[in-house]
Image 1 (tube, rainbow, N blue to C red):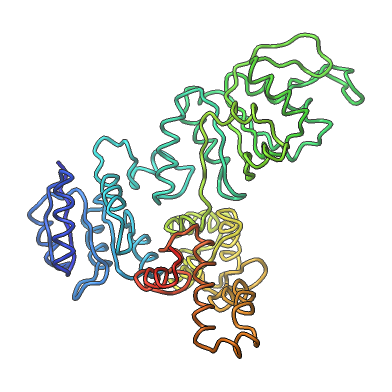
Image 2 (image 1 turned 120 degrees about the vertical axis):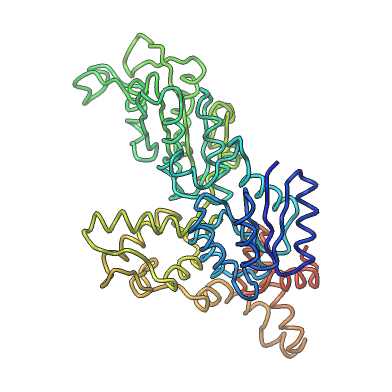
Length: 460
């Protein structure tokens, strides 16, 4: 039985969570304020705290800071009725286990608490991540799923196909799988399929014998031979030509390779981890990728989320890159300003983690003091993005379509405003894959306001 402390100034919320969690088998204590919560902690061993952020007197953030100072390993889950990026930044920067917006899904709160209180480590706790996976930075729910999948698949010989946009860290995930596998002491051989010319691909993968083609002045073993008994990482697998796809399929089926120009085959034992930023199912439908090869590669499919879907990890990543480039550039840049961090939290990061790293490296290089200010942050050649820029750039066409001069005369301004609001909300929901929390943040609405408008316009 785990012990949960609920901290909320609303009695109805305390009672609701107490009943819910006791039904789940937890022992539950409640406190109506931050100070009362500290009194409870002095007299009771608690496994996890669930606290509201905005409370009279001591705020949830102040409670979080105090708790982390005395009990750094105690997970604290923050909840709030206001979808504010500022709250998320402060909560995650100060060590919150997770951040949930009211009204939350019952299954969501149960899942987060289960993750935080899991004694058997079936789900990895954020405080354990640096020890288990120091090569990957993150503690969001999305990354916890990745860590859990790595733990489960790494000891097996199963082939893995990693999906994800460019810059999300697919190779880091592949390296972590290899590092935690039974062949961790063997070679990890990365192969970027798009970087090798088509006429040399077969030779690079499988090797060649001397004299097999012009320029083959000696025998070459090939990358698969180097990865024998280890792991071959095939990045950008969707770029392989049909001919090479066929030859790769044979290697996976027969577990043997034959060098270009050779007459003898060689048995190999190679674990394949492939990665792509393409949707291979679409490539199969278009006839550009073999379906049988896809099923050989995707024994275990994994998706690495883009950074915009795990914004909670931005403060951790910023801190990591600050330390890295302060050392490399020999500068004493120790932190980023709170407004600078908020600018990053509001950015959509089309280049994902790789782009964030580039932004912080530039920021450290340009910083005139030991703190990065917003003016030192540049995005795709311009200064910090603003909400005004975002609205102008992304919604201008929608505005023109909804508020043309003819429509104004025909329908009236109130109808046009409703029409525009409906289009903006619909567009934003599509942009966020129907995440109402993220849509509310982008539109600067409370979650409840957005939910009301979604119902009003029949967008649910």
